[in-house]
Image 1 (cartoon, helix red, strand yellow):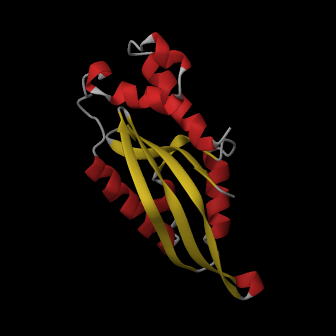
Image 2 (cartoon, one colour):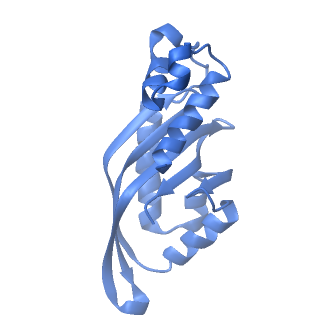
Image 3 (cartoon, one colour):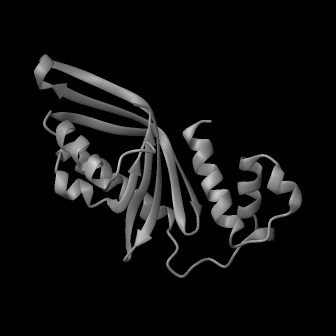
Length: 168
């Protein structure tokens, strides 16, 4: 099963716990069920502190800029203390991984075809990344590409990444 399917199932399960879902959606396609939960027919009242598309766009812009600056402390402030990366790494392991990556010069980090879906209380962001980085040990500029997905939630009035999965 693809990681994005796991994220969609997480959304569906979270929404099932708080909303009434028709029986045909409980056994049907996950994407159809999630879309059905987003429709007005099954919509829950929007939480007072729900995440907006504009907030997510601003968050993602700052996230990308901070990655390029290689500021590990500021970069890690985008993550929840309970964040999980690629379904395995914990916050401290994520920090170590980015500390190592930031030892090399980063020229650019682009997120293409970014898609933002708001499913209160979370935002689901996906796209494809292109990172251009100088690998000092190889004396070589390298380009990394792949698909990436984030789950973003609000903690203490700040947006935080709770899950990040990408092609490794």
